[in-house]
Length: 138
Image (cartoon, rainbow, N blue to C red):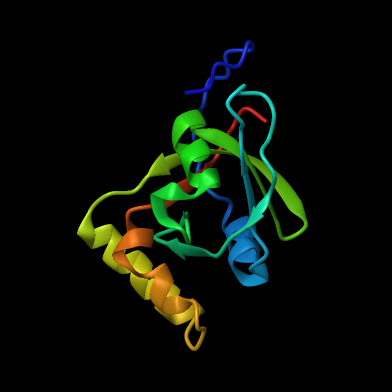
């Protein structure tokens, strides 16, 4: 959990449809959760992303052992860079077969033909699925 001296309160909002479309279409999302100090952004990591029901989802290729995933789950916030813009975001874990099945389908549709598709819809990565929410307090 963030221990930021500024006591950041997270007010989640929904993605602007145009921003979400641009993020998904550009496919250049870099994720940077806060480091343990709750103030410093981690090194941006390029990652695949998909949208389901107007929400933005990412998965850690190396599963729950991924460094960015562990930071995202501990700190619950950070920043993403995509489509030429930056957003302050919050992170929440995703659980449940129904939503993960829909996310799998979105990965299949978007990344069909990639040699990395199978690992991205495996149990290892499903267990490290994250919903990325824009924060209102930017």
